[in-house]
Image (tube, rainbow, N blue to C red):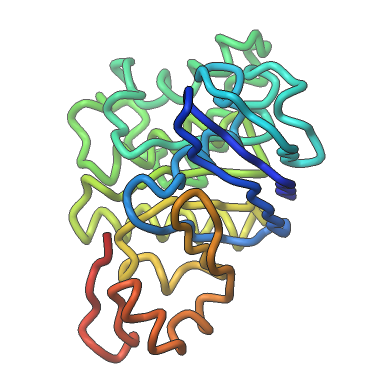
Length: 250
C-alpha cells in the first residue's frame, strides 16, 4: 500500500531524510516515532504529496501510495488516495456545522451533490459524529474536533491515512476516543494508517508496527510486541511494559 525507495529530502542545505526505504502493507497501522527533528513530519508530508507539490524542498527517490507515484499526481487527486490529519484540528475547521465541514472538501473538488451527501453521511456514521452533525465544530471537545477532521478526510474515502501527532493537544479520554475511532476504521474498512506520534504509552496498544527514526533515517522497524519485549529499546523510547506504569517519550 505504501512503498518508499531511497527517499531523500532536503530544505536548502539541511538534509532531513536520507535514503529512506519503507514498505507498509494494506490494513497495517504503523507508528513512526523518534526525537524532535529526526524527519518524522517530513516523511508524512512526502507520503501525502505535500512534498514536493506544496512545500519547497528537494526530493529524490520514489514514493508510491496505493500504487500511485505521489510526485506525478496533483494534490486534489492524491487526496482521494491518501489523507493527512494534523495535530491541531481547529486549524482545519471553518464551517458552522459539522456536516457542512465534512462535505466541504467534496464540494470543492466538484463531486455531484448526491455523492457529496452519501459520502458525508457515511463519514459521519463511521466516526460516530451523526448525533453532532448540526453542532458548531468550534464548540466541540478536542477529541470531537479531531474526529471531525478525520471525517473530513474519510469523506474522500482514501485507503491510506497519515496522522501527524493527532493527540498532541488532547487529554487522555479524548486521546482514547480518537484512537478507538482509528482502530474501528482499520478493522472494519481495512484502512492503512501511518501515525507520527510521541505519546507512545497511549498509542502502542493500538499499532501493529513501530518505526524508530533518528537523524533522517529509520533505525528500527519492528512489530510493536517485539519493541515492548526489547528492554534496551524500551529504555531508549522511555517505555515500560504494559503491566508497568507507562512513561511518555519525546
